[in-house]
Image 1: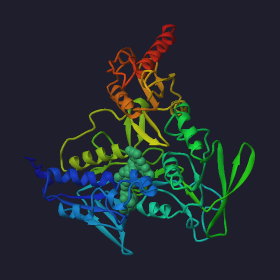
Image 2: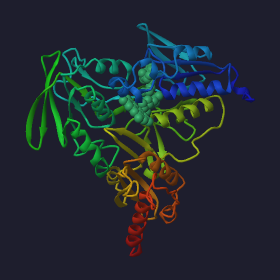
Image 3: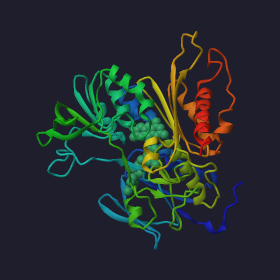
Image 4: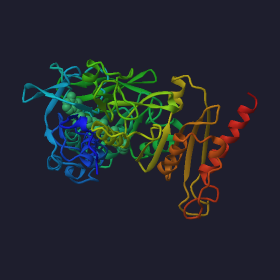
Length: 469
Ligand SMILES: Cc1cc2nc3c(=O)[nH]c(=O)nc-3n(C[C@H](O)[C@H](O)[C@H](O)COP(=O)(O)OP(=O)(O)OC[C@H]3O[C@@H](n4cnc5c(N)ncnc54)[C@H](O)[C@@H]3O)c2cc1C
């Protein structure tokens, strides 16, 4: 039975947000304490739903939005949690331990003993000519994808319409897949020369790039949307600059998928420590540097040893686990991330599974970190098996033989990366890692698993390079 910390009698805990981090925090509190007063306050009207499932709702794979709702308002209320929807928190006063929020056009305040900030992030809108109307709002028919409301708008786009997606990040590519599956004409314009550029290495996304194009999507890489053409209200087209020439495209809709930024303004105004990218810094207990204030989810950054610095959280899996920890610690438990943060991530779109952990070459170059890199393409099964396919790996290793990052594309990519995620977190050196044992059966893998061959290749390269240093 939970032994209540006496200092926490009558504690009132306030959670800002209603995404997975916030609701996981509330759940965690209730797991340990059935009575403590908890208020969850959000500017949304629907309780926790899977944002990750929104592209599947748009395509129709998920037939009802309600199927994406994981925890309803009723569920929380039944647990004795006070829920305030459609209320936007404006500021925090850490001195008086008060939050100020807008509800029904009135400013209200709420005292907290412990505060959990789980405000997530929102889509970035790049500075494009013609993106806003005279009243400062987005031109009609320009959408982003973050909320159920966004998904409802995008879902209404009909066959025969032309859509331009700005940015080939995860949301952009997943939205493109959802729309093209419904016969909608989709073009994607990406500034960098590869798809999913901030998440995966270029050679790892080659198969995906091919499949995007084979699905009839016009993909413009190393190209930028310069201007959105409209009649002041409705989108008519876009102007794209590519390889020193300009292309004018007709468009009925524009979907902007150019990355996210954290909803951290109120935390920053309250002087809570944050990164340059404005993510709230949390420790392994989800504590901020402000007394009695915790944070969890996409609004945060955590220390990642592979990066020797703070890395922004951007995945539902980590947000959920952070929320559980923040909730427990807000009522005086001592829970923490027991393994270092390695940022494992995955997706599957256009029939390609991709996964990665740790850094990419782009990030390492930016941070001026020296590394050894190795690329390998192998077979997923013996060549005599009809379902044999290709799988690609790319690794980044430091001179000491520690993995800094691994990327994989193909069959079971996420399972392979999950193994490397543990290896990275436990700092298994390539000397041991390449000796890892793999199970074998022709229906499952070749006698030498492709990851075994890839890691051995990496090990040999590392030995050769470091032998002369
Ligand atoms: C289309 C899409 C696909 C995705 N796919 C994947 C995937 O496959 N795998 C994966 O791991 N992750 C995926 N993600 C990312 C994942 O959804 C996020 O990491 C996760 O939702 C973050 O949860 P959170 O609780 O931190 O933030 P959010 O879910 O963003 O919740 C924050 C909440 O706080 C509210 N809020 C913000 N500011 C205020 C304020 N001032 N006052 C009151 N309320 C406020 C917001 O309205 C929101 O309800 C995807 C995201 C999208 C959009």
